[in-house]
Image 1 (cartoon, one colour):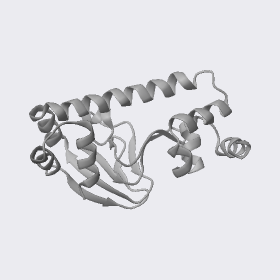
Image 2 (tube, rainbow, N blue to C red; image 1 turned 30 degrees about the horizontal axis):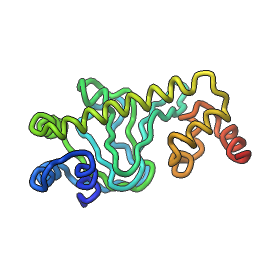
Image 3 (cartoon, helix red, strand yellow; image 1 turned 180 degrees about the vertical axis):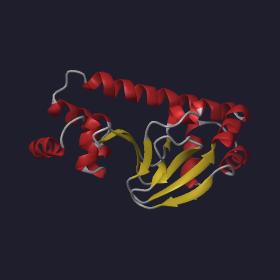
Image 4 (cartoon, one colour; image 1 turned 60 degrees about the vertical axis):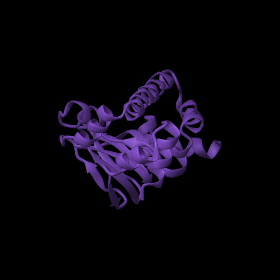
Length: 189
């Protein structure tokens, strides 16, 4: 149940086995169904999730009812509605499993307790924040001026799992194009 998290911690830090076991003891196993909502719009993000198995997405819904995918997370990564998790203001997005998933959930209080108790865990948190910032910046600036084909090529290079595991509808909303356009481009590749 904790083998993926333990491997993650061991590759990212020099924590000893006792520390890794202590950290893992703060996580609870959660098995979810496909399309299960973990955080609803306007909820407070009270948990951070580590993905053992499955795929999770962050998305919002426009006033017209259109879903816009913002981020996808896969095995071996952490995910939550981060702005809400940090400032404890209502999330302005949804967090949803898009596959049957096995997650490890940690409460906000326990997460920050580990950040304060273990400098190595604090370093992991910093890396998570930095990586999230870099991915968001690359996506924003990378997509500026890109046509649809260039966006798809960028995703293939930078986020190859996306087109393999995510529906065309969700991937298209992430890329800012229609599912029909994405299908047409994929058929040309």
